[in-house]
Every structure is written in structure tokens, then in C-alpha cells.
Length: 271
Ligand code: ADP
Image 1: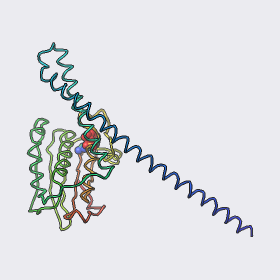
Image 2: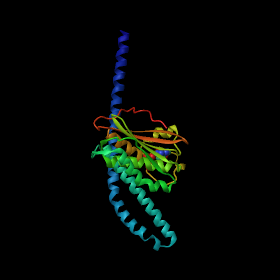
Image 3: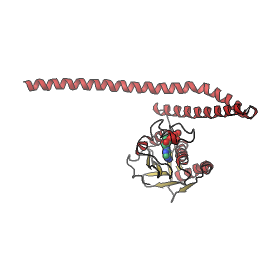
Image 4: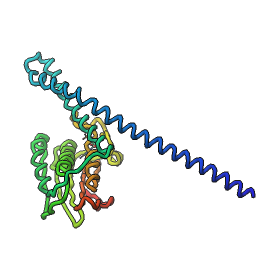
């Protein structure tokens, strides 16, 4: 008898707990929708005034040398910050498109090795400026794979930009590889590398490692999270190996067919 009572009490309290847990999950889901809406609305609202500010800034920036030196510097500072604001806003708009699920891929048969070569060519000057150079290792033909080349190019440029930024002027090696199910592209740098803690957070939104190592005003901390979203939309994966002082290896793996996502455990990524 008393055992039954205890069981009934236990069942009731479990029921209560499950109920409030469900309620809490509903609240959290609503909250995150409200948050997504807020980010999207704010970004759209800021777009119009920023366009006007950019036009005014262009005029001022073009004439900066006709001002007294102190004003020239102010004009240059203004220009840098307006550009930074513009980048941030574009990234925020992009993030809110992913959250809303409104991103459509434009798939085309594309050769990843050729795409990599194009991206490298486009970033050679920046690498040289930083005393580095980029080598492409792409043995064999990897065939064409259905992908959205605009988005994949953005991922590769982002990885190359990071490798140049944190690569300590050492050479950067890009490797394109493939097997029956997937094609991959790895960007290896021999620079600063990251701690285990950094590696855990590197794909998080707005994450930037230790501020003291930021030498340029640079990015927004959204580059890799946008790249991750783009990879996932393709059924692909972005992963990383890194060690402090030994550099980093970021790898993008795409399925040969976007309908068949790559396994969430691709081959272990090694130095
Ligand atoms: P951003 O480059 O705009 O800061 P990302 O999302 O591209 O944003 O990168 C987030 C952070 O991850 C960087 O600020 C940097 O701390 C770290 N990171 C990315 N790539 C590398 C790399 N190749 N080597 C060392 N740290 C890196």
C-alpha cells in the first residue's frame, strides 16, 4: 500500500518536472525566435542610414588630403570604421538569413582544385605583403562536384585570410584531396596556432581569441561561423587541428553529392 503511494507521488512529481521542463523549452525556443527576429530587424534598419553614411564618407575620404593633417587622420579613421561597420552589418544580415532558413544554394558542377587556385591567386598580394606565400598541393584530378561556388570561394578566402593573419609570415599550404564520397580542401599555416580552449570556440559566433594578438582591426569574429553554416548547407563539414606555436590546419570537406552529407566524423585531421 505505502509502496504504491510512494510510487504515485514519485510519478506525480516526475510529471510535474516533465511539464515544467517542456514549458521551459517552449519559452527558450520563443526567446531564441524573438532574438533572431531582433537581430534581423536591427540589421535591416541599420542598412539605410549606413548607405547614406558610406556615401558621405566616400566624399570626405576622397578629399582627405585637402584638409589639415589632423583632419586627414580623422577622415581616415572614419573611413576605416565605416568599412568595418559595413562588414559587420553584412555578416549580421547573412547570419539572420541562415537563422530564418532562407538561404538557397546555387549549385554548379565545380572543380575544387581550380577554385582553390583562383582564390590563391586573388590573395597572393596580401600574403606577399605579410611576407608569406601560398602553395597549392592538388595531386590528381578530383572531378567536378555540385556546389555553390560563390559560397565555397568565400569559405576558402576566409580560411586563407585567417592563415595569412595568424601565419607569422610562414608559407601556407593548401591541399585539395578527394575520395569516392567527398572532396576536401585544407589550409595549413605554421603560425600562432590556438589553445585547446580556442579550438573549442573557434566556430562560435563573434569568437575571437586573445585580443592582444589582434594586430589588425580586421574581421568581425563571424567569418568562421558563416563558413560553418555554408559548409553545413552543402552537407559538408569544417574542422580544425591546431596547436599553440605549431600553427593550424582548417579543413573543408564536401560530399560529392550534396544530398548525401559527409559523415560527422571524417578522417582525423592531422598536422
Ligand atoms: P575573424 O577572423 O573575423 O576574427 P573568424 O571567425 O574568421 O573571425 O575567426 C575567429 C577567430 O579564430 C580569430 O579571431 C582568431 O582568433 C581565430 N583563428 C582563426 N583562424 C586562425 C588561424 N589560422 N590561426 C590562429 N587563430 C585563428
